[in-house]
Image 1 (cartoon, rainbow, N blue to C red):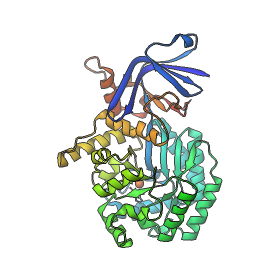
Image 2: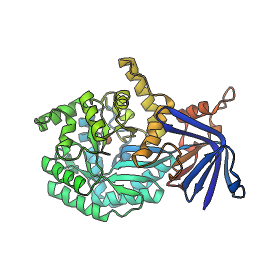
Image 3: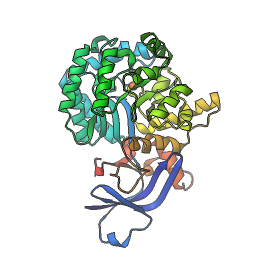
Image 4: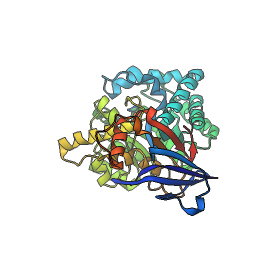
Amino acid sequence: MTTILRANLIHTPALGRLETIPRGYLVLEDGVIRGLYEALPEEWAACPVTDYGEALLMPSFADLHLHAPQYPMLGMGMDLPLLDWLDAYTFRTEARFADLNYARRVYRRLAGELIAWGTTRVAVFSSRHTDATLVLMEELERAGVTGYVGKVNMDRNSGPAQETTAQSVDETLRWLEACRFAHVKPILTPRFTPSCTDALMAELGRLAQERDLPVQSHLSENTGEMAWVRELHPDCSQYWETYGKYGLWKAGTLMAHCVHSDGREQAAMAEAGVWAVHCAASNVNLCSGTAPVRELLDRGVRVALGSDIAGGDQLSMSRAVTMAIRASKQKQMETGAPFLTVPEAYYLGSTAGHQYFGGGAGFQPGDRLHAIVVDDAALPEPARELCLSERFERAVYLMEKEHIRAVYSEGRQVK
Ligand code: GUN
Ligand code: FE
């Protein structure tokens, strides 16, 4: 089936590149992009057109790091540093997800809100609970959110949410067996080095290698955490090696934060093809620091953005984008490293994340459409006529979910 969308087309095919087609046409065949056109080619002249008028059609967001069971604790414990925040709030909140009715309620709402805010691809941490993790996957699939979900592994230092090593391994196997979703796939998720014994890390690494499964975790987020990792693994000179020694450091591994990753750790990421997920709001909220995003990019590390709720206090990825810009300006004031421009940060919060899942350069022919339609006419009336790149900038900074008029995920309209 041919679908033709008409709108102001805006996309970010590469870091720092912004392309616009005023009042252009985007043609889909069964949800797959055929092309973007300034004028509608003759062959489709007879097809009906979905006309979004003056609205902006842009890539949807990809949130490559968030904790689904922390959704109920958004905006809580924000005056604590990471390790105290985990003990005082996080582990207790996650322990509630043994209750499947509670999980269903929270995850249904979360999945709906992700779509409402234009997030169509995710890499999510669940809790340690297998059944609640399956509920999460089901709710995401139902809402039209695609990507990876991980049952979290945590067999030490994890308070009431802790599991034994044998439980953690057995439940991971049971969960992998039960994952049968079309667009939501499993990702192995050792929470972080302090919460996983060596035996557990070794088992997960073996699974990652043997079954070619992707991996996500946390890296060099906070100095207290890093000192703890050094105590736990005196044989490793850097944090990343604690993942490396068990086969968890491989192409496509997602590492959230990397706030304190130095040149050597960054080089290890670039060499292995490990991605850094930058979560600017969380890093400020928990006083973790300001990640060296420009440095990571310059060294050839792939970077995407994450909301990291509930370390981050906003589910909105447009806010994660503007927060990443602000953090990069803070970094520039400290180190002189050039800040992220709006098109650069938007690329990191959208297209880069889609590329993690195999997407191409912006709205690329052959890809299933992941897009949002933003109605910026409801924003305050500007003092003069704005060009498309100005309207894009304003929309990125100011959009609320009410301005997101339509959302396409995997080629299907889901809002
Ligand atoms: N490190 C280990 N667990 C967590 C978590 O839940 N949030 C954040 N921000 N860092 C972590
Ligand atoms: Fe996190």
